[in-house]
Length: 309
Image 1 (tube, rainbow, N blue to C red):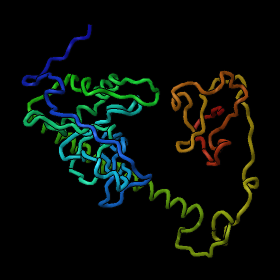
Image 2: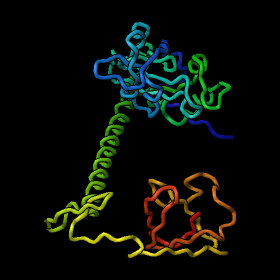
Image 3: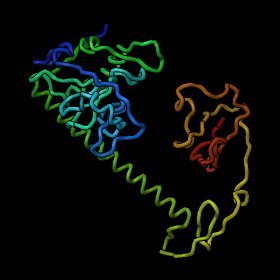
Image 4: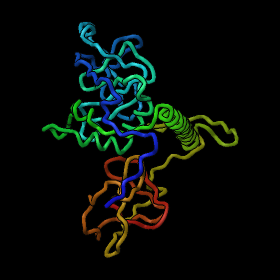
């Protein structure tokens, strides 16, 4: 039998209804197939909370004739929860850091309002967004459709929550928010560096920027321009096709992915999608290139030799 963890002194276990005063759903309104412009009224998509961070840009513009029917806006210091979504995303939620008056919730989203003096909503958002509670919320999902499930207010309100005193909730929320901001800044920096790398690669590989500040006119290569002092030849002039087969060898099977290059097929797909007989699979050795037939991005093998489907 698994030993239960001791509850810290001063912490309580209560149903979520002890902390939350109300869960109010929005209204389904007719919308346009575009994002609301600045200052224009819009209806949130369920994807506004999918990532666990409230994204106000995930919206559609409301038809002018429908604006009066919309009623609930994202309110500062509240949590928005998806009451209807795919089986994996139902119950997804996010903390609202500031009120957005011109946006409204659809009927698939709830706005959770706290009971005053009992809960720090940023802390609760971290709790409800944790893997443990996401799993609990998903377990409440019902519905006959395989692609869309829903959860009820009664089930969510009955969810047991272990919570510390209010000052400790705030301290925990402040600490986790600091880490969240640091991670977000790091991710933005990585994205910016990757963008710079892609741009510099295009410039250098196609000769639009030259090492040593060389300058040459660009010639037209039909699909791209290249330096006039470079030669443009068919790939057959510098490479040849290799068709070595795997035979009886037992090698790791790789798949050619569009964005990640060669990947371990079992790890990438989580199951076997290739034939049990790999004897006729091609072998790609270190330093060789391969490409899938459904797109033309070249993929380089960095180590070993591995059969590919």
